[in-house]
Image 1 (spheres, helix red, strand yellow):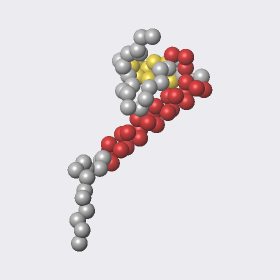
Image 2 (tube, helix red, strand yellow; image 1 turned 120 degrees about the horizontal axis):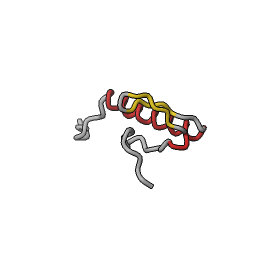
Image 3 (tube, one colour; image 1 turned 180 degrees about the horizontal axis):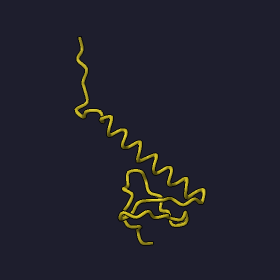
Length: 72
């Protein structure tokens, strides 16, 4: 009987997969708002802030949201 060689890295956990799916869904929703000219509403420093579509910065899902916008 042959032994299977298993990968030394365990598969990602369900919560980790769920968190990644959530990040990707949020990134896509933000990108759709920008494409459709719709603002997004966020909570910043305890206050509700509306960001117009022309000021939305679309980032990759792996990049964290909430930081300062990069200077251009």
